[in-house]
Length: 239
Ligand SMILES: C[S@@+](CC[C@H](N)C(=O)[O-])C[C@H]1O[C@@H](n2cnc3c(N)ncnc32)[C@H](O)[C@@H]1O
Image (tube, rainbow, N blue to C red; front, side, top):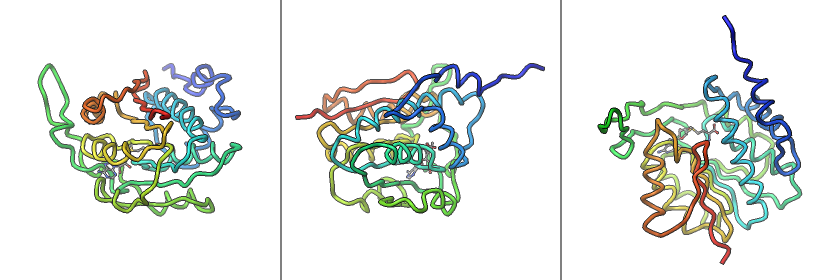
């Protein structure tokens, strides 16, 4: 039986790619390894591509005033990678606010229904999927300053956040309700030039994240771009 050499493929795809002066692939691999993040073989390319785009936008946000927030931390891969990027940059450090139930996904609702064979069907992904051992996640960030943990369900947990401006927000909670309420919370608090990345805007298995994005941004006439890896990006006007 022949097998696919995924590492060779990643090296081909990301050869020469750099983020803020660092080679991307070693940074990506370091964060995957340090956080012990599992990834199915079929998803290896998409995960790396999204990570590359995420890192590029985060790098841009280092010049913007305000803190970093991530909604949806899981094992900590994306937060860890961005933190390593910040540590290696000549930039003012940002506070990292990490928000997750750490109990996995909340209950999918009607906003998460899938279109299958032309009909709307319930999303049967069970609540609790992606549950992790919080102590293990904490341990990966030990010794790093200015990391603030917010364990709880979105939207209630957002009340714990300090009232301040945000330079970069990564929303990666898969589902309609938490994506929508997180967006409604952060949008009016973004710094000029601040960036929001919605990881699941175009994820086929989680259409709710894209629906929520349109429901919040479209009525406000706020422009965004959708990337081929599935993310959507909003950048607040500088004015
Ligand atoms: C796909 S994972 C995040 C992946 C992570 N950003 C990474 O890079 O590996 C989605 C996370 O969203 C969290 N989550 C989903 N719904 C939530 C809610 N309503 N409140 C808080 N956390 C939630 C889950 O616990 C899970 O850890």
